[in-house]
Length: 170
Image 1 (tube, rainbow, N blue to C red):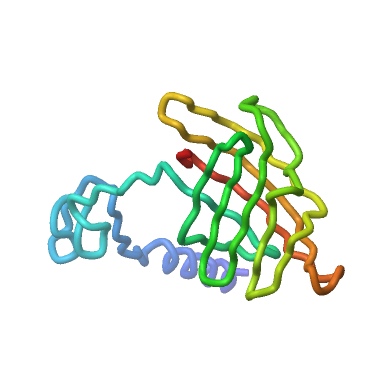
Image 2 (image 1 turned 180 degrees about the vertical axis):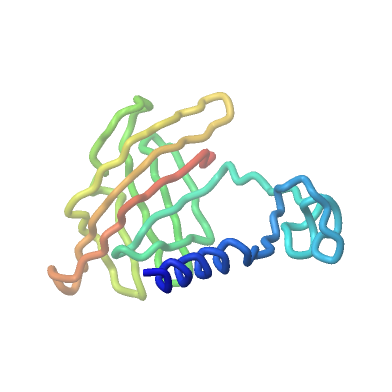
């Protein structure tokens, strides 16, 4: 019993006496050799870093894979047409007419997709929600999901999920 107590005491002593040196980039203490200035530079984030705000963007998942797009645009004539593309995808979604902040089905006419040169001209389901329509600065924000069927094979689908667009000008 005495031996167990001694081993437990020594174990606790070892655990609490070994103090691990941690670098904190928000402790308000300048650490020479590790920081260039107080809590920045060296092992900490760069000093005088100013993040670039990104107000306008489009993000989505294609067949459950997060996908980025090099180009996106919006036109209103009178339907809202959102177009976005990258090196393998070219997608157009017709959100229909109207400016109300609500959900609406994506229109089949004017909606299509091309993925790796395969045409997906039939939209089997699609829905969008407008979250902001700004007529002063001419931009639209909202969310969307869609599912296209290939022209070549009815079992080949292109699913667009978690679509979000923010402040896209028309």
